[in-house]
Image (cartoon, rainbow, N blue to C red):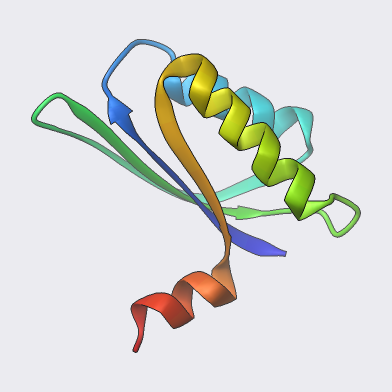
Length: 88
């Protein structure tokens, strides 16, 4: 499943490393990434390919927990749903 991962929060060392580590552990391929710092806030969008055997609900929970641990908000959306939300 193609998906979009968004990460928002106060900038700090290690955000990209920790998010990328979770993706690698789950064998999730990063297709594209865009990242910037806006007024001290970290903003990143990733297009990823999630293996079909992974449970997206469980994966969403793991991203939520990681976000809490590192103090950012991490959202995972199916790319089709993300596209529909932004192309009304």
